Length: 71
Image 1 (cartoon, rainbow, N blue to C red):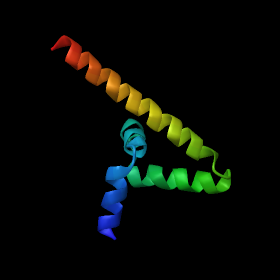
Image 2: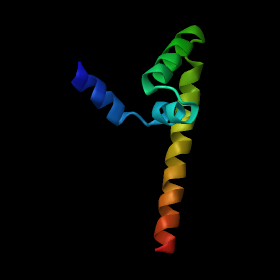
Image 3: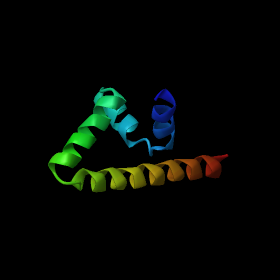
């Protein structure tokens, strides 16, 4: 079970860990909130999650581009 959990944590986009760090919550709790909210609202938080994942990737590439530019 630990192997599956670590695989999911590594292959996820990092949205839950980012939100957990910003709000001061554990990553597991943020994941549970996303899961519960998805069941209650019939999946609409999944769209929010994917948009946030896209935004975090864009932000990462912009920062990487700036670092290469100034090197």
